[in-house]
Image 1: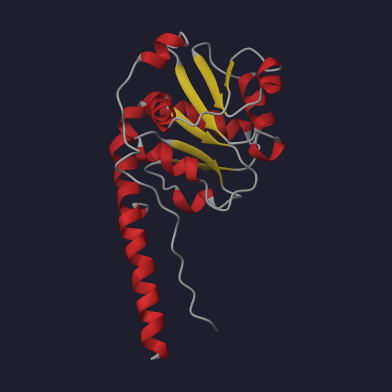
Image 2: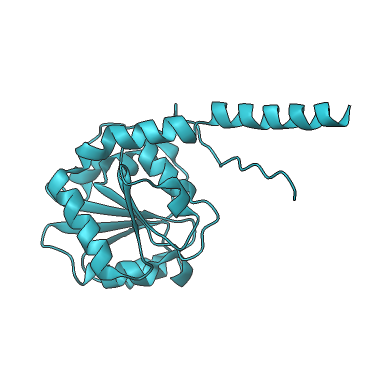
Length: 203
């Protein structure tokens, strides 16, 4: 019977935006590769690490997975097809990876929102998320795909469509979607309006 209002998390879209830079592709020898990116502060089974490992076994020849946020031990145990990178505190580096990637895959099993998904879209990169988490609320058909958890065939089908259309096809849709729904200035105003309404009711 309560009045419930949802205000989504948000980000600074002035910082998170497409940044053209080929240095990462040169450094990691990814010049012509189709790049699948995953980012987490801590990687474990709930973040979908095992799903990425399984996905790496079915990749096309020119596909590469890059996972950011891994420990040294995890990196040493990665199979071929996955490039592991330790956690970075550099916003510039993270934005460069989001921009460089052809697709961002959030394989998390439990997610209350999924900031990395929004960050990737703000940089113009299409996304794939599991439909069993809150990430599905943030993804439309124009910006990416919502697939059944652990469904490797559905993930590969989504990847195929992005390969065909090219990442650039989704760029404007992703950026516009974030600007319209997750820009911090608008969401802060939502909080202010909510507080003002609550105060008005109590006066």
